Image (tube, rainbow, N blue to C red; front, side, top):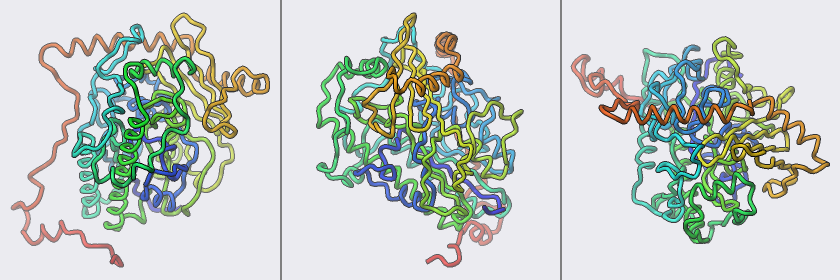
Amino acid sequence: MSSSTPNILFVMADQLGASALPIYGHKVVKAPNIERLAAGGTVFENAYCNSPLCSTSRVSMLSGRLPSELDAYDNASEFPAAVPTFAHYLRALGYRTCLSGKMHLVGPDQLHGYEERLTTDFYPVDFGWTPNWEKQWEKLSFFHNMDSVTKAGICARSMPIDYDDETTYQAQRRLYDYARDQADTRPFFMTVSLTHPHDPYATTREYWDRYDDSEIDLPSVPHIPPEQRDPHSARLFYHYGMHEQEITDADIRKARHAYYGMTSYVDDKLGQLMDTLERTGMADNTIVIFSADHGDMLGERGMWYKMSFYEWSASVPFVVRHPDVAGGKRVPQTTSLIDLFPTLVDLAGGGTPDPECAPHLKGRSVAPLLQGDAAGWPDTAYSEYLGEGAAGPCLMVRKGRHKYVYSAGEPDSAGDPPQLFDLTDDPQELDDRAGRSDYATIEAELGDLVARTWDLDNLRKRVVESQKRRRFVFDALSRGKPAPWDYAPSYDAANLYIRNDEALSAREYRARLDEPTGAE
């Protein structure tokens, strides 16, 4: 690889599973820019989130640790400012670090190592979305419901479009600023995080019309009644209210149609950012990484959204394009988002993160895999779900071809039966092999990994205690004069456009960015 320090652009989607993309075999979705990135980069075929929920997945990704290690259990868990992130590390290595878009990190620190943030967050960053496991059937206002499906379709405009248009525009503008800036020659690390294609499933006519109605496929695994599901999936059925209204095939097709359009919107945004790198002449020295925080069941098995460990929910796209690595490669080894922290530090020339500054990192750098070196790779991913709709800790280990799921189930119960799938023989996860004698060895091995990774005796207690504290704090802070933690972007208007601190022609010329030599 090149000895020069590369720039890094990390583009992230929200609720976009690997299963829904053509680079992973989807036959309907149109994503030519993701395919362009893959053709010039490396596709990781078996990448997972470490928690199938927005905030906890991102906490894990930024910290390189499982979220429960940081008491991050749900979408209202505080991310402590003292926890080192990859943004801290890259900043310490001499990068200017910039975030544009969603990160859904809860608490008063809304930067976590980023030198600047170009937008506010899309979701609230307080404790208002704290679930209550002691009243697990209580319906709270922030829980998912089926309106996203029954009201899916075409819109003229939406909040996610407003947000992601702003996110991408601000990121492109900052990339142009980097190219024009002659004073600050530091490499950049920019995260551009979109909220598409997260539900509600609504897209504009432009993106809806990229797909003909006849193209839209129904789920490959049809609806499974709740009484025939595993207990956690049955609880989710009632959690997001599928028992309260009929969901027709027409509803499902409309929701998937809109989701496919929203995915094409994400693809266009990625394309705009890649084109900006080309126009500024920075593409040849910029690593581009594309991923997502988790997937979306999208009607598979009759399930929606995330919150489970089935492939459509737990697997994520992960593509890395490095200017010094030949493109068109595919990596079959199992990886997860906690590998991003050590990978970024490695690619930035920082070697292995200092264990005293970034303790207990669970991931490993995928840089050797980019070069085809899989020696010693553990081929294992861990994931956990401790949010709304669960009756207790839900935990997953994927090792090689096997996936093992442990769910604690109802309080004071023996727990839900474990699940074990052979994803090579059974990619649709229809044949649960837990309890079979011919799988006893692998089940024992994966069960042991669960027991060694999580404190099964105390985890539920910790979650419930945290929920109580946060609900009390939120209620107290809601009284009297509020002091929101939401990030408020600012800018220095005195140094924008034409000002009298510099000769007019000099300022205009300095702000102009010419095309790279050789560009048409």
